[in-house]
Image (cartoon, each protein chain N blue to C red):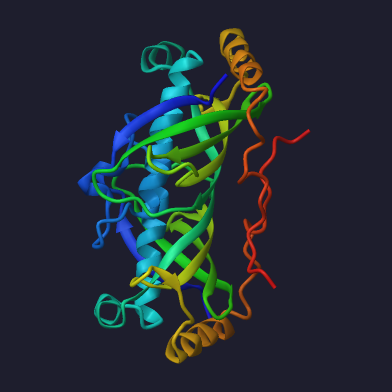
Amino acid sequence: MPALITYRTPVQEDWVDYNGHLRDAYYLLIFSYATDALMERIGLDADSRGQSGHSLFTLEAHINYLHEVKLGTEVWVQTQIIGFDQKRLHLYHSLHRSDIGEALAASEQMLLHVNLAGPKSTPFSEMSVQTMQQLLHQQDDLPTPAFSGRVMKIPT
Amino acid sequence: MPALITYRTPVQEDWVDYNGHLRDAYYLLIFSYATDALMERIGLDADSRGQSGHSLFTLEAHINYLHEVKLGTEVWVQTQIIGFDQKRLHLYHSLHRSDIGEALAASEQMLLHVNLAGPKSTPFSEMSVQTMQQLLHQQDDLPTPAFSGRVMKIPT
């Protein structure tokens, strides 16, 4: 299976700096929308969230900036599930555009399944677990994410 | 010396999700504005950037989300320099509000000094190096950043 495409957008005017380049925080906004789209796939769409009171909170995100991206460029996000347990989802997003093979940016994220009444952490539904298991299985043949498990430091 | 406060803002309407909570990417936007403010302190304000053509690019950012933050909350960013070399600046931001002692979020970041003509990496000016050295020295007695050097993984 090819990587799952979760989100697609042109780079918008509100997102760029004085140089017309996508500002660092807005790469993460695009990945945030991609996470929303993944939530819909695993049964946490807006309707279900309203009914169940369940959602995903971001615990931690790591992002690597690999290329500049200009206003108006059409970009998309590919998403891989690295792993999950009863309450946590560990995933990997990468940002792409059509005329360049390498990723423009990559982000490893840890999300927590919560009951908004509290809020407190709560186990995923059986349906969510099955869908995540399927996605994980379909992605068996994808390469290991290049920018995961990294520690940040100045090279010596 | 107390920690350096680099940025202060109320949480704005554009930054919150359907629940009225600050969205994950907008924590990073607040930290991005704090980095802009730090740039001004080390001689990379908009005027100097215009003249020298030098700026900072974010290479990598790691962010930990520790508390929810609601619309309208007044927050501020404290910034510590973890280290720097000829071309790289390794820093640590934390987000705070007045009625809670712990940080609301923390972000470790690696920035690269670049000449926008290229763009290509280029050494910091002598003035930037001296200012960063002073800031580093003033922060000698601050505790080691709690959320730095982390590897992301699901606990086993």
